[in-house]
Length: 200
Image (cartoon, rainbow, N blue to C red):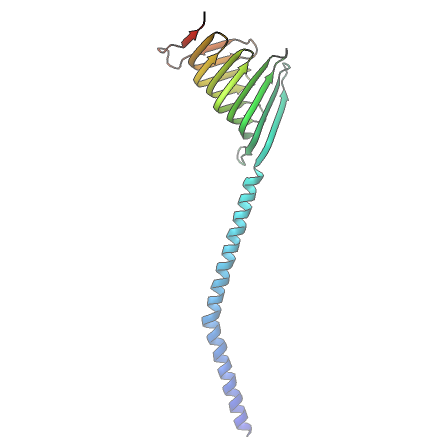
């Protein structure tokens, strides 16, 4: 009787042992693979969210910078949105830009463009895409305007169209000295001529 019970117990134990071993070998591995796959998917989703968060934190809306130089000129630049770059800490890309230079004697130069690259340290700005300047009764349209505060200098490039009350000028380049207020109009190729039309 005792032998029968022992044999039955051993058989039951053996069957349980085989079942557990079989389960671990075939089913647990599959479950483990599934768990690893699910963990990887979850990790990827979290990484994506972090990346999206980083990108979102690099964009600011309704930005405005104001600065004043030693000559008493005030520079104000505003943008509907701005994007900061991790590698270029001082540089900002502005979108839908309006700027103005208020000079010492209250002469104002208005500049606007679709985009601009702005340096927070020097205030130097490169305006791009559908750029125009309004200064008194003078208007200039162009592809690019480079504003250099270190040199007190504006350089206007590509498809330049200068307009005042009586004159239309088409050129490749216009240079404006902010101190002397002198304006120089030229072409890239010296053989080409500046095109001028006017009312006399």
